[in-house]
Image (cartoon, rainbow, N blue to C red; front, side, top):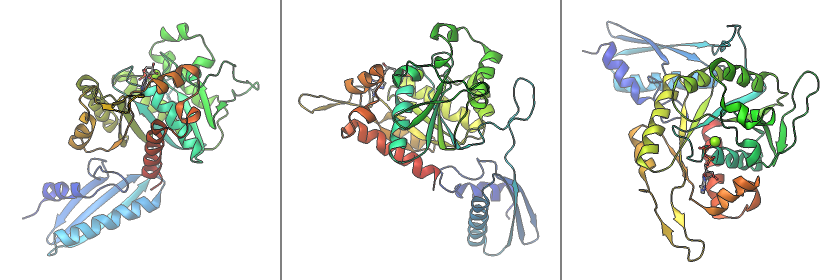
Length: 347
Ligand SMILES: Nc1ncnc2c1ncn2[C@@H]1O[C@H](COP(=O)(O)OP(=O)(O)O)[C@@H](O)[C@H]1O
Ligand SMILES: [Mg+2]
């Protein structure tokens, strides 16, 4: 005898198009009814993209028909407009960044794992690939994007909006342009979300295909609220292969899933060391840890970046390595990840 639970469990085999995650964990299966020999499944999808809805509906229909050939299968689909995020300040309904197609967080459980370095190089890599890309420094406590792009000027304010900066083909905004670094550290709760809202609303963002968010490190309430209020379309987690960093990366994966943000995958940074003199490779931390965790938590390893003096120097000098040494193997690693991300998003 089949019942709702059995069918629900079976539906975990159906993946969301383009993701390794299943439709049940995305919360798309709204209800299941079984009457005599008929299985009726109702799907609710919060998306504007009807083609995804149709794909999932067909996949469910085909899957159930082959799994339960004795039964009649009826699949209903309701498309809902994605919920608009509410401003934490005044509970007005705000639609953030209407000119941006995909809002992707670059996040890490821990600070210092190279999140900003990865965000910056990925942004430049995407720009090189011809993607219209923006980078919003949401790490209000330690905005490092201005430094990493070598931007010392202040953005232009036209009396109504602040114009984003532009470097290496990337549109950039950071609180670091607007306040001194030391001031940013003392900000708390409501001020932080207000500041972030301003970086989204009061900036003249052009039409962009992808906006990367350099998120503040950690997986606490602040990050959770932030992820919800931005209404992210996906998250890239950065981790080093050390166990401690990995534990925090997994916390990050869980946090984003809690608020229904699809995990695009994990980047293993400072993955291994290649001696610039003899070319010999050394695995400083236990290499491969990230790949194992990815498998365990049903997500993808997006790529591996070596620990490398030139990558660090590029960050300090304000010229990301993807820009300064485009033919290096390090740049190739970033380009591959960017390619991976683009292919996952624009499936
Ligand atoms: N792959 C790498 N190889 C060498 N140094 C790196 C690498 N990734 C990051 N770093 C360096 O590590 C430090 C921390 O990186 P950062 O991107 O600021 O981390 P986070 O944003 O996670 O705090 C910086 O000095 C940066 O240049
Ligand atoms: Mg950082």
